[in-house]
Length: 81
Image (cartoon, rainbow, N blue to C red):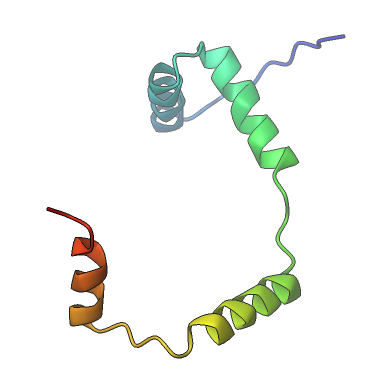
């Protein structure tokens, strides 16, 4: 069952940001606030140790590739007319 909550004394600049985000997402201000709260509370927390393991694995896969300007430009232009 939905519950109503009231938030008081929101700083004007924060309110304007919420209002702008709501417009960009085509939501009401109320629905934007709910989406922001859900995103903040339900987002997956990253375990720093797991993140470092993932980074090390990626580095091992790419340690033979030297990212020079020439390599990057070639990769960007590959397959283009």
